[in-house]
Length: 229
Image 1 (tube, rainbow, N blue to C red):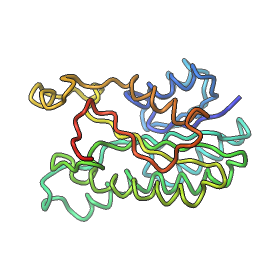
Image 2 (image 1 turned 60 degrees about the vertical axis):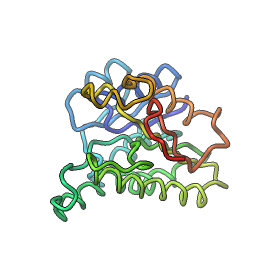
Image 3 (image 1 turned 30 degrees about the horizontal axis):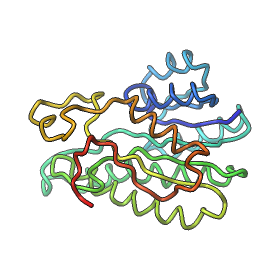
């Protein structure tokens, strides 16, 4: 049985991803700050712990406990919360540092902890944002930090490709776990928001052997929102 870790898994995209991977046959280790992670883990017969993706020791504990319980890690889905928002030059140094800690360093740290344990190869999928490709003033820190995450994934792919450890990023547009107003929806060519389950299907493909020759890539799932080439 293969084993997958999913962070920020208690609701929205994280929970949908956990449910999909469970249906794919993975044993799961789940983490979230919310107490809701307990009920989801009971539903999916998974191990879970409360913790935060911006806390290095929580991530270390998650990996170590997963290895104690299951003896291996085959896939990791690095989902996380939303960095601070605000006007570009009104955001403080503390806001920027907190955002990078949340949206970039979570992946850097998780990689440090889990890669040495992936003896048979593995797949890491990071939930990023469309702003990594088309920066938005509505999400300035997220756009910048996740553009950096795209660069990190390229370097990771170069470093660990020969070890059969892959990393890819999923870049959602407006997903309906966070309802958007009609004005925003009207800017999406498909004229609707995406669903967490649609994101979960893409993640399922990227952690599986069906994507064995794909690494270091960004995958937009945004209904055609981003126009850049």
